[in-house]
Length: 282
Image (tube, rainbow, N blue to C red; front, side):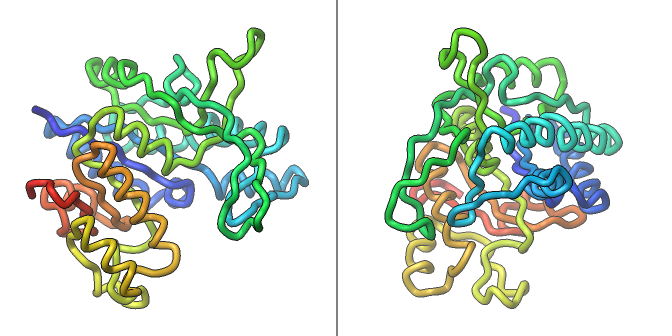
């Protein structure tokens, strides 16, 4: 059976044509070997840039973007427009028969408005994030249909509530990590690859050579308790543990580099950190 994988690419990587091309050449190589891959992308840096050029101020609480009506308009233009087009064009140049798909298309990413929630760094009161959604369903058949046609979907992470309004279904901004994980879980993917600005989970966050090749869930929890995993890596690995519990075979945290994705796919732990459930055979 052909491996199924979801690849999350952040807007910061899309903004770097050279490193992005290296990643997409790896995608082309894997697809050529029979892998079925869905690419999910964000666009945070591009959205912040457009907001600045439009004279709009970005509002964030605890590092999370508040999506008011003008910001949602920006996210539509950036995610389903600029970033999607640039990423698909780069994929085609790398030999990937890619097709851009917005999460709204065909109700691919179904969502509901996120209720006000208390967040770390946001004070004691619940925060209303505006037009931000929580994923409630993924239309996997659409992705599988594209694969059957020989196409690699490039998914912009907007969501929609088809039943939310009889005139125009509400559209929501959703974090790309959240959408990629939801898609991977719905597909029962063998692998979820999350590209980051570091080569994996490090024993010493200031030393890239201290990368930990593989970790079981229990080892991750122990590393957090002992202070080995610190800072911004904590929410990444905690999210990875939830993804494993949701049925994803393996979660890979890796950096961008020539051959990194293909190497990690063929030999998990060789180029990044592969996170596995305690009972996963590997």
